[in-house]
Length: 265
Ligand code: G3P
Ligand code: CA
Image 1 (cartoon, rainbow, N blue to C red):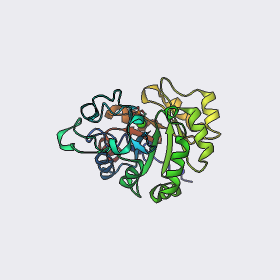
Image 2 (image 1 turned 180 degrees about the vertical axis):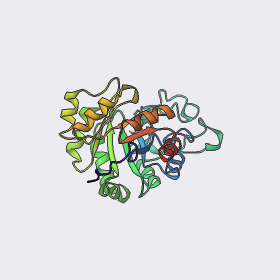
Image 3 (image 1 turned 90 degrees about the vertical axis):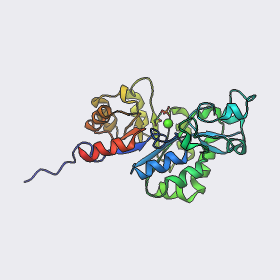
Image 4 (image 1 turned 135 degrees about the horizontal axis):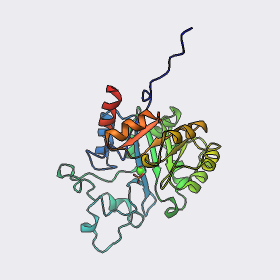
């Protein structure tokens, strides 16, 4: 009797575009999202912050300073935190020139715009940043995911996950939004056995940094019935290592490079 066919390691690894295709376009802009989709990423990752008037926007840092021209435009508003600016103010900022002149005029997108740019075929990995700065953000996010057809469709198709480094917040969010799969991000070391045993009762993913991972950690995570997406892997050697461990996804600024490695084997 022939042995059951086994998938080769890597055959089902997701290409996860970190902040969009952020090696080639300004991170977390619609240009980076569209490029990631064009490059056949399986999933696009983002970072969510909240404006003074309660809008969810896509930006990695708490402050607008690194990735926009806010310092020039609003010189007396240091430290330029997203939470101190209205959406209308943020919409006037250039979020592309810092990266390269051809992206001048790129805007900080809202979560709704980001979802539309990802569209109906690609997965969504939504990271809520610094939720302790934004009381009530769990309910805000839940409302948006419920209200917008593109997110409802992604949830129905099992193409959307919400992740955070703040595990206590994520647990609260999971209680508010029971239909949304969630992932715990880990920094500064691999997850412990106790963390994984707990996570297995309510979460879907455990996502450490590549440098904190070994093949044994991948197996340990899988033994708890959780998936793992490693971050942020930008060189071919690291990508091959993670693929060989049979991770579920590799989060990278260079989705095209990862796609090519997966295709060529
Ligand atoms: O998705 C994982 C990764 O994005 C976490 O780190 O700082 O790039 O958001 P950071
Ligand atoms: Ca992130």
